[in-house]
Image (cartoon, rainbow, N blue to C red):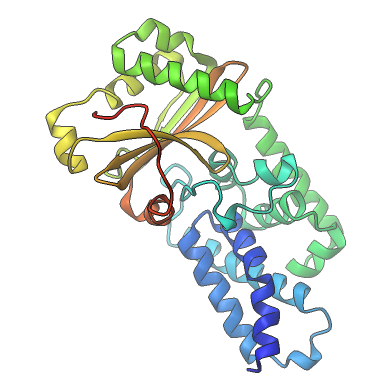
Length: 312
């Protein structure tokens, strides 16, 4: 392959990776899909490709759909057993982030909801909401009719909206204040204050410190408060499991504020918060080692600053 063809692909690699991450919810799988797209590009008769960007988008999207369908067929990604891979803000896979829809499409909340859609609905939603493709362009990418694209988009938006009935999203300063209050209540035993900081329809989802076979879900304020109190209560057994005493930092993960738990400079878990109208509306706890590799790598490249909890 000549250098011009390689340069042409590399110019679009970031966009393809962002697309693949939204479709697959996994940075590692997204990188594999992009590399497979490159191999297809390498083997293609490029002189017959009129619009390389469109061709690459079509190939990458359909490779991701093949992965989704194959995983579903093997029951590896059944709803309720899988959480997306969290990424530290600043990771290029989180782009583009110019519009509310683009930023929303990459939050852990929405990526988790997208698992409930069919692969085709997920693809249409991502292409339309995050990348602003027209229904005519989506139809060409997925080899469906424009009408089918519109129907998939409508169903996907309806299902996502039904689960996302929230008040106004908090500004960063307000979210930071709420999460700090939440952590103080969670680690001090002030259960009444903890409950007061949760919305009436709060939800919490956890992978059980990476040990549970299925996701743990909690839906009432009392149950979420109980789960959080148990999770943030330090014990010798928990410290042994984590590999030592934890330091907890606040950072932004997938566009929302999160607690990043660190042992000896290594990320061992994260809890992402969604704050709405001055209260915590949802929490996503991820500690499975294979879901934290990219976040941990990014963490090593930054100054973590002063932890909010320095010895848990």
